[in-house]
Image (cartoon, rainbow, N blue to C red; front, side, top):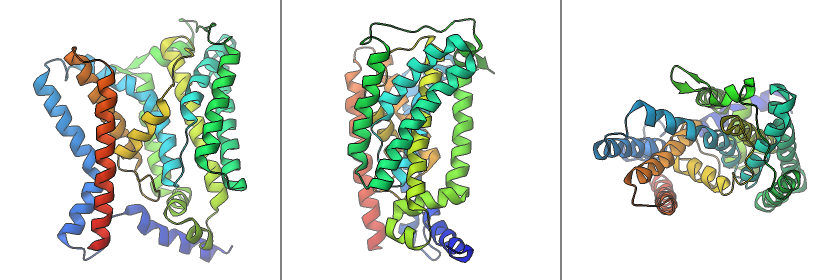
Length: 343
């Protein structure tokens, strides 16, 4: 493929990336575009204002720091999921890879921080690579492939921990433990790592050639191939990235808990998907924002925090409210999409 064709692909997909209303758009079109891009942020602000008025402890430094820290691990998983969903795919294996990454990190911590970090990245990244190859090269459905990977990773996890009866511990005096439990300027180190990853991910998705390909594949795979985009390589890359993010999140969580807890990660794939979709990324692909996924994670955690502060409600209500939010967002996205096409 010639350079000219590649540049043409870049130029065509740039318009799809911005998803802004076109020049000369009507006021309704501009408002619809803004609502689709920033609706989650507006909802988050409203929810935080309401929570601060209802609970005196909500906006305290300790509460906000705890929310940020508990959000960091899900946010890292959601980062990788964003790339996958923008391509029109799905990854159901991230919850099991998160738990597997935590156990591998805790086991590897006895050999040093490098092993504790690199081992889960290597194993979970390899699983993501296999997922991508099966989906991109063999044409298998992402749902089936990643479901199989989810079950397989959970099986490996149980084998490593004697059906969950063995828990690997992290030395509390190790650098790896300080990586999870340390703080900088009153904010946990995992939060700073997450912020750095989201900044890098946003630059990659919005400003790099690879990011243009991700949007192009999600927007129209056949058209992307005709424009010279490496469709198969892009799919392999995003699933590998998703595996790496899940493994890293698991490792950071193990450092925070100073142990590899086997029961974690169950349902995390659904939380990550919910956060990404609530943040404005379309499940059909071709449209989405890294920052939106971060807002989606924050909104889910605010809901959880409010329910915890109420005290009389159990955690089941969080799932009810989160499900209602997700349904409302999907309906709103569908309506806004149809409105833009009509206008």
